Image (cartoon, rainbow, N blue to C red; front, side):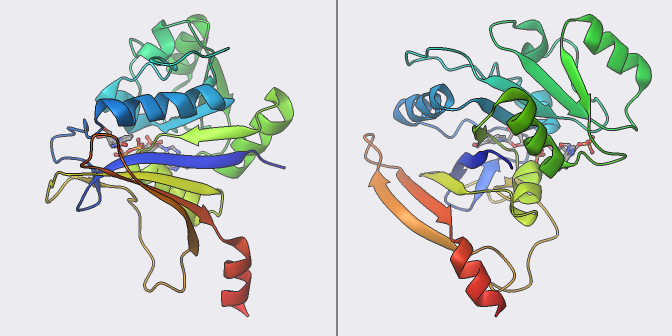
Length: 225
Ligand SMILES: NC(=O)c1ccc[n+]([C@@H]2O[C@H](COP(=O)([O-])OP(=O)(O)OC[C@H]3O[C@@H](n4cnc5c(N)ncnc54)[C@H](OP(=O)(O)O)[C@@H]3O)[C@@H](O)[C@H]2O)c1
């Protein structure tokens, strides 16, 4: 068993979630509020190591009333995130850093010493399926919000671990940088998951579109026949 997994992402019209220098402020205030509403509605928020290194997000629900703070889950196979990261120093919410057997033992001990939980799930790559299973069984996590970046998004999609994708298309172009999905890719549309559009909205700002897709599992089975 695993939790329901939602990826939320803001992208430029050319599908980038960050520019070539890592600039990623693509959300208008309305979109930011929407993101924080989703944060307040889930049990855990998951991000990849590079997102922590580049953006240093606190990953707590703000701008909305929240009953509690979701668990912050950082996927960091080699424990590259700095110990000054807000997910470590800010104690408003629990953090679990998920790493591998290849992580340096001294950094692991250092992070644990700072009162942050570290899980070793995998030899060289974090096993995302197992991580989600553990979150479900050991922590009662039923809904996970994934906030990128592109590599983590790709890996979760590729492993069939995503149920819903909410995208905000913002009126910018970057031309290069980090894409919504960063991986080896699919050769044609047949190999990837089939997505079903469940809602389209124009943002209150009037210049962004919010798209909500669910992964159509029946579609995938039919395509494989
Ligand atoms: N616009 C938006 O909505 C938005 C949201 C989030 C992030 N961003 C931007 O996205 C950029 C970061 O994206 P990114 O693609 O470079 O990195 P990322 O997905 O944040 O992190 C990727 C790293 O996570 C680690 N990792 C460990 N196990 C993994 C696994 N099983 N699958 C995937 N990753 C695993 C890997 O590092 P190790 O090999 O060291 O383990 C990998 O390099 C930043 O510039 C950030 O600003 C934008």
